Length: 386
Ligand SMILES: [Zn+2]
Ligand SMILES: [Zn+2]
Image 1 (cartoon, rainbow, N blue to C red):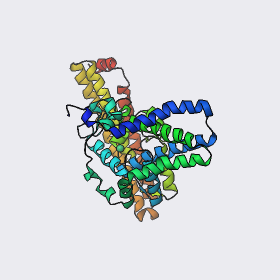
Image 2 (image 1 turned 45 degrees about the vertical axis):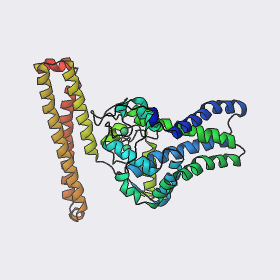
Image 3 (image 1 turned 120 degrees about the horizontal axis):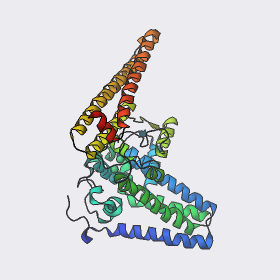
Image 4 (image 1 turned 135 degrees about the vertical axis):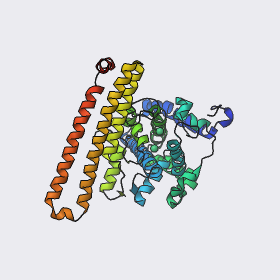
């Protein structure tokens, strides 16, 4: 662990100046301008468009497409993500991805560029102010073969200035609101997109639920998901980074996932990667098991606790093995459908479906028995096991 995280020598003055100017214009210029001129419909629309386009280009583009390659996209989509991603002024897609891949690989260690172990402020914005490390591009060889990604990387300042400042101000000027466009669609938008993105590295590594991996610092936080086009389900994301979804349940607020799915529907994206529902369910159950055992162990240390944990572990092992049997039955059925035999044999199909159904019921039964134990108060469970 580095001994000195904060030092004047490490300060990146261009970043500090950029954050200071954009934040000051947004927080001081914004209210002053609003009080004098109000906000017109074109200004509001331009602001909302830029919030959405740049926000989604970071989440569905920089993050899920370029960093994790959770799907493939056609060149038009890749260009749009690079263009509006640059407008977010969060470095080139190549630099962003190289650091983000290191974040996943070395999470919480000194090689994690925005490690939460160095504190909330460092993970949030401190790493951009005090970070004088050299970026290691060895982990982005795949992206280095992409001519468009490399162009955006080499001429990043040009891309960012045109897409992030010149274009919105010019669009505002067309309706006679160049200054309003600069304040709202550039400075306020940048400030909001910055901090909502930064919340993922700070808030989502400190607060929220550890549903899929109880030992990870990454957490699922619904409020951050709301502010970041669905990126707040960070515990799921660290557990299954190759999945194009972050909010995995259908009702989880994840507009990036819906956009990717829409692009897939329109044939602009393909090869959308999903982790099997069985693996996700297994991770959830493992999380529940760890959490409950931890509560028991913390509750009291005695023979009764050991007996209770043993009883729970046996029930949990049963849940796991029934889940494996259910998954196997589903896989066998899926394989059957791939063969020619399935075309001729309704009988085989029916038998396959019945096997799945029986395995699912077995799992459900085992789960209910286990859940009954885990729903008990620790003291009650200890009484039963004594
Ligand atoms: Zn993270
Ligand atoms: Zn990630």
